[in-house]
Image (tube, helix red, strand yellow):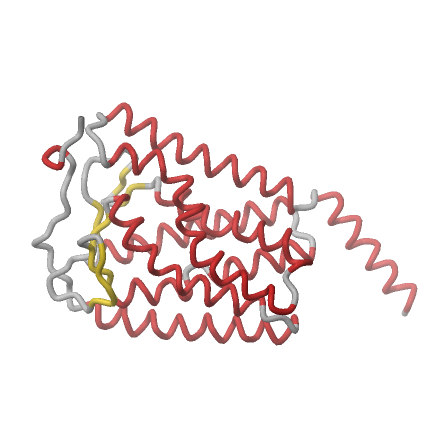
Length: 270
């Protein structure tokens, strides 16, 4: 049976670096840019849905304490500009602000792209770009000392456990799929239902992929079981992405034929 003594504990003596002030300001600007983009899309589509997605993603910042606690991520508590505290975890302001721009623009883009007819190839390119963003974001924070991961985790490179990449991708795609499928019913007051859904979807979808890792990290599991947990997290995420592509994406030939038809129609009209 796992006990508190054999589960890795966070570095309680870690000190938040001075860079947190600069990063907090930058993240506040990025949050504002994300809001402006959201308003632009709402005006263009004449729909409050993008705003509901933005508000819900912003509220999901209160999931951060849970996922970082279970995923063994630590924000240095000493000298921290704290937004809120729970589960013995202090969450800094810059982490809360990140929820305003980290997820919402990508989800809004996906919902719009699915409606317009996103090709399977474009979908996988989007995932590759988003995965690169996840890696770059984390390495920025790790290199500045704004957060760190603790405990032994397979597939950790320069302090970053790569199982977080597929787990974070799960926040973007399933939520966009649900909204895309439900959009015909999301009219009038029902649009507001997306707010609580988005506020909880980090726990629903990130938690789904992360469950093997949460279980392994917070137990006495050895390297072999932890490696299996990493594989399972990648497997859950990739299977979800494949199913999502089958649901919402068009094949390349279909998109090409439609583009050609539209081109021919435009020439005929001209």
